[in-house]
Length: 310
Ligand code: FE
Image 1 (cartoon, rainbow, N blue to C red):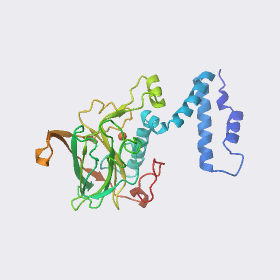
Image 2 (image 1 turned 180 degrees about the vertical axis):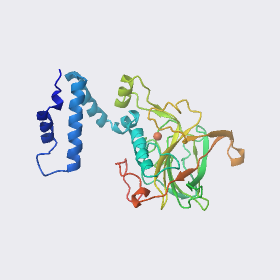
Image 3 (image 1 turned 30 degrees about the horizontal axis):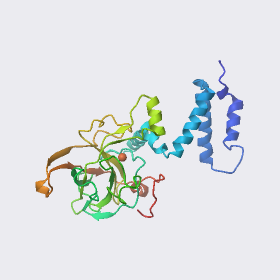
Image 4 (image 1 turned 135 degrees about the vertical axis):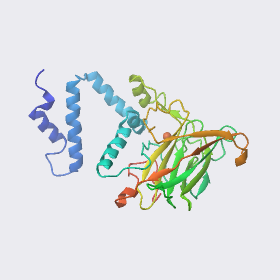
């Protein structure tokens, strides 16, 4: 076929109608986006000769993806969330917003409103005592000149030894392994926690179903998520991925980046008053200065739990 049906003027007009271009109601921005989705979908169907069976299988897949709340998992799995980081970084670079700790994906498992502590805190509820390795995680929040930022908020969350997150895993106590720590007079934060485990997609879920078709695994290395914020500085969404994990550079969600590998040192806990082996991880963050007020805020993406002012 030489003439692409999807590119004809009639079809373009037809999709403009479908996208609401023929009326003055609704949301112009959404109309623009929907039109493009329709045009690109039609083009893809035609170019790749998508069969009816393939098309309706995809529609059924989307229904199952939504029903299992895994859309936020498929998106990093297919690299789109990492792409957003690269795109935003490229845009930042054009206007001179560079330097500091690299951003990386947030993932779908943040829960707002974690308890706030000044300077230091214990993050685990003790339910894995004797099973988990105690981890001391500490560092500073600095500006681009290396000067400490006092009163920065380090909002961090990570999985337990089974690779599960509190709130989503109802067997854990509320806000287990989720805390906000306000940096002290030296810009320092200190957390006593446990070494998290990496984790994988639900093997029965639609994300893994797609990855199987792509010949890919759905595993992540052990990691700790962070939101770092401070008045006058740009909000940073990032993660530390732990050294020594076999998936460190084979992360299905593409979150591991240069500059975000946390070197875990294992040793005896006696000096810290802990029996047996402990892990120590020192990691400091550097923030860019905020240019506009909204730079200080994290994105407004819908999250699991919305807490006013948290
Ligand atoms: Fe995670």
